[in-house]
Image (cartoon, rainbow, N blue to C red; front, side, top):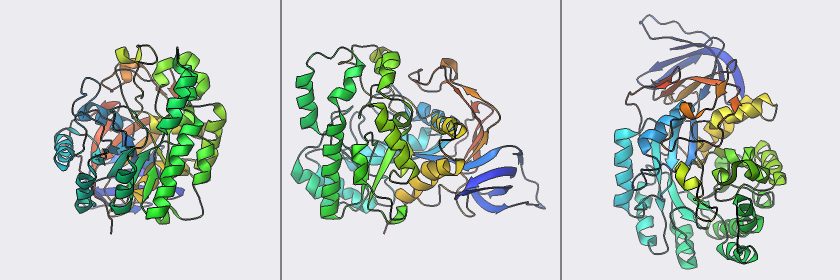
Length: 440
C-alpha cells in the first residue's frame, strides 16, 4: 500500500492512499485501513504518478547489442519512471516477418524490466506479411513505416505498398516522415557538410512537412488510423487538430523530449551527440512545438530513445549515426519544465501516461484507477537528480544531458505492483508483461 501520496491523475492532484493487490490497484481513497498486514510505502511529501508509457524506443536487440539490449535499456527506463515501452522494428534482422516479430517478444519476456510491445516493420516488398498482423491486433503495438530513411535502412517509398497498408491495416500505423527527394536535393546544396550544424539544413522543415502531408492525405483517403512520430517543425502543426477528444482522433501526433529541449543552437556544444532523424531544428520550431503540445494538437510525449556507442558518435558528421539515448530521464526533464512554469504536473501525466494509453488503446494501464495494473512512479520534488556518466544505466554509457541537474528525484517505480526501482537501484524482480490492447 502507498500511503499519503499526492496522486496526480486525470487532471487533478489529491492526497490519498493506493492499495495494490495481485499486481493491480484495488482501491484509491483519501485513507485506507486494512485488517490484513500489508507492506506500506510512506509517500508523505511525494507525488504519485501513473508510469510513463514511451511509444517510441529503439532497444537495438537483436543484432545491434553492442549498442543496447532490451535488458539494459528497460532498466534505464524504469529508473526514469517509464513502466511500458513500444519498440521499433529496425533491428538486425528487422522485424519484417511474424516470426522475427515474435522473436523480439520472446527476448523481452525473459529480460525486460518494463512492460513491452513491438511494432511490425514494413518494407517495400512485405505488405502481405504485414497484414497478417491484423490477426494480432490486440497484442501488437502497431505497424511502423519509415517514410524517410533512418537507422536500419527500412525506407518504404513504393506507393502501392503504402496504399495497401494504409487501406487494409486494422492496426495503428506509426510513421517516420521525411521526404527523401527533398533531402537528396538538399545534399546537392551542401555537398561537403563538415559538422552536425548542417543536419537541420539537409533534413529540413520542407522534408518533414512534405512527407507528413503525404501521410495525412493518404490516411484521409483510406480511413487509416495514423500516428505520426517525432514532429519537429512549426509548419507540420497545421496538419493536426485539437477539436476532437483524443479517443476520437484518427490522425494523431507525437513530440519527443529532445525536440522540446534542444535547438539547432546546441549543435555548437554537442555536435553529433544530438544528431538525430528528424533533425533538431531552429529555435522557433521548439516554441511552436511547446504551444501545440499545450493546446493538444500534439498528443503524446515520447523519447525516440536511440543509443549508439560513444565511438560511433565521434565519427565525422556524415558517418556518425543518428539517434540519442534518453529513456532514463524523460519524466525528470519534463519536471524541469514544470519547475520553469512551462507545463503543469497534470499535463505531464496526460501526455506521458494517459494519452499513450488512449492513443494506442492499451488495456488497463496509464491511469491511477481501481482495477488497472499498478504501474506507478513516486517522485520527490524536493530533491534533485544530477545526470552523471556514473549514474547512467544505458549500455552506451553516455547521455546528451550529462552535467544537467534535474529538479526532482524518482524514489520508486512499480511495474504490475512490484517495486522494480527504489532508492537509486533497479531491483531484479520479474514483473514485466506483454502489453494488451483493446481494439475492435
